[in-house]
Length: 305
Ligand code: NCD
Image (tube, rainbow, N blue to C red):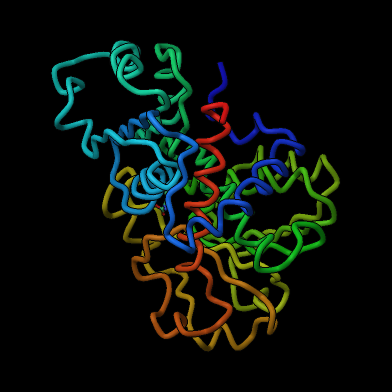
């Protein structure tokens, strides 16, 4: 059975296939229409960690495909997990009810563990600091739509690169494309994991690391922004050291290329000045629409539609 657990499981052709399929679904999303492709099918969303966009986005995608949704947004507190039920047993149960499952969990690897008990396809909607395969795909889709290509771009990734599952997913996918350059901007303690940096370099990509965002703003074709991931820190004191370390402001935007774009999975905490929102290069709200189309593509593929 096919699951969507890890960004690394997708081939170049499969990524292109999903991007194509998502392009086809954009009209449905923008027109707020409903197809009948997934008629009679049920998506279960199981979230053990907070979410606004990802859960609603998967659910909207399923509804626009013509399917149905059952949902628990607070699995850790209100499901039988609270009574000690294993992920395996929960998966056995939920896959009796639903035809496809989207799941988020605070522990890396737990969505894969869950999938071993599931008799239906499982999509990873974020597992701890590990991976966020659907977000990475919607980010690529946003860039493809807005920049017209996924090759030959300089990606400046800034923020908590150690703990952001989103930038990890982006790097995995981007390694399939040609001629991209990577500039990783973070405090020393929150650097991109060494295995990602080494893997990109081993594949021939140019990778630069710095703590200074301002000095590299002018290089970016894509600024991939992400918040400091508070919930991944050992203590509030540790987190406070980094809160507010990078704030995207109009002054910084003035140093960037005219056709650069800013993407960010959100939520915004304090790391983007709201004065940047009206800059036409800011795509972080527009991304939500691309996300629904991409998740329609992911669900359609998982359901074999
Ligand atoms: C991201 C996540 O949950 O990893 N958000 C999202 O899915 N839209 C990024 C984040 O929480 O910072």
